[in-house]
Length: 93
Image (tube, rainbow, N blue to C red; front, side):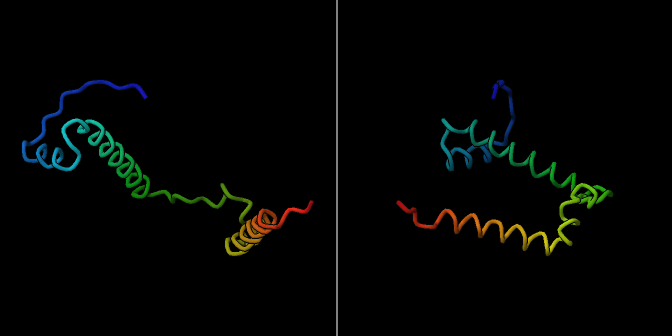
């Protein structure tokens, strides 16, 4: 990912706390991580606060074809169990 230098003004007390936690030399990485996390959080909240439902059953016909959500989950679990048993089966030869 490309980087760009920017000027950010923070209260001195915040800066001292950040430096105490992560050190002066990793301050930018810490602030970048915190900013990315907050952007993801706010985008999620934006989606969750929309009037339109997040889930549209029309986008998931496989669930209806399986007989509903509970049946679909049972099917997925059976398939996962079969795959696990195949992987755990002792090899012959």
